[in-house]
Image (cartoon, rainbow, N blue to C red):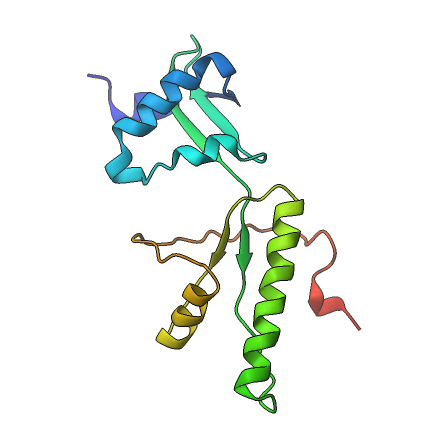
Length: 152
């Protein structure tokens, strides 16, 4: 058995998966369904790309399906607005976000709720609670549009 150091030095090539690999990709995903929450619907998403990580001989070690999704990031509420005004405005804003996401090829929208009222509102808007942990990785580098902090 090779050492971990030897394995980590193995050259790994990255490429887009090929259509002919689709049956193998689906079989491997299905085999780990209890660990990866595989959803076969992803294969109909327009933004789906499957990355293949292979050794030099093209033996695939991993296929990683990647899709673009929209994330609704928090809600800023005017403290002077009534609960009815907030609810109506939020419904309309979510519809706009859904339209925008769909137009850009996204087929999933995520909303993170940290309290029961927000969770109830998300369910009312058609979001489903997921039974898994969510992890975030922030990417560095300059913002393409300068970010909102630079807005005047």
